[in-house]
Length: 120
Image 1 (cartoon, one colour):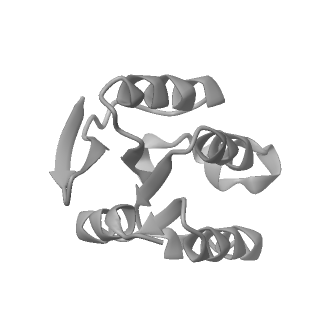
Image 2: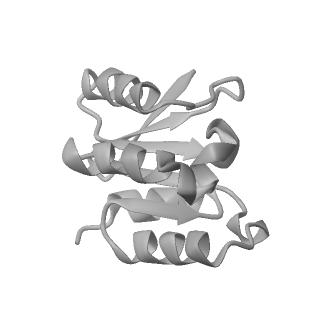
Image 3: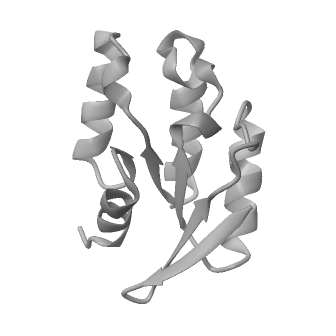
């Protein structure tokens, strides 16, 4: 289930379906297609909506999926507690992503809205 928010004239889609698991790049493309039909290019998902392979960088899933968001000009905020992941490479990946202007790993919905509506 998708909930749409309009903040500062920006439409943001929030996935609120705990049963949705993004396990393949095609799943992400389907989500982008659905949101794009609503003129929305900003998406919020939660950590639990991602297949655990996303957080195992050696699988390539995270890089491939997030590249699609960049290629198709979408912004993404992923809400979760990422401190539990002890992989240095994953923590570096999260830090690098948060330093950019397209993909954000955040702790809560308010932070997601702030990141997705800021101009940069």
